[in-house]
Image (cartoon, rainbow, N blue to C red; front, side, top):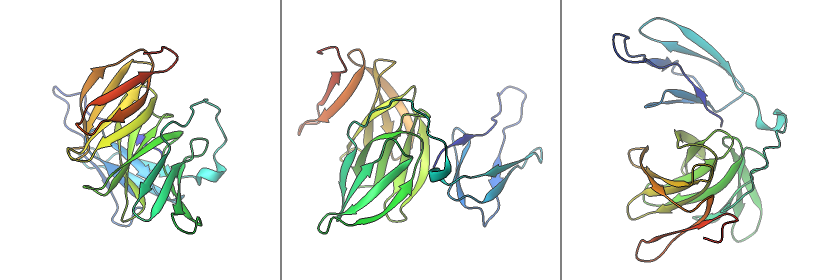
Length: 219
């Protein structure tokens, strides 16, 4: 579920890079900011079609990745998704799925490092998850149960809420004291809103007002 960022053109006289995967590759090739998300422990060859340059990527099972104590705490880490409850595990790069009625675990979804918060957009059938360990907002397709994109949002995203009427996600960036606004349809950051110092808690009121609370500031 983690992202490998790929080389990109610097513009000017440099040609645009175009990366491609084999048809049987088990992973997601990101557009915009070029990157690759492996979905299995298999080796994958990524080819830049203009230059012929290749990069071989080998994924690892998250359970075998050494624990890095970055001390990112879970915030809004539980969400109801259809007949299930999804939980961002924070200390492990996984989102757990639990049956709402029986309480039985229905497996987990591999995501990026330090998933601290999740939010569901039923209009797009996507779950957004903050990856505090690599500064991205991951998107999980509910139907397939796999991560399908990761959007770079800024340093240490901690909490996400979604306005399902507009498909806009709001993501706190505590070290920057701002809230990033992400268009989930276009999968891009559209703006950054000034917030209190160390913004962490978020809520959307019924009239669409965004309420932001700072961590340890009383604001």
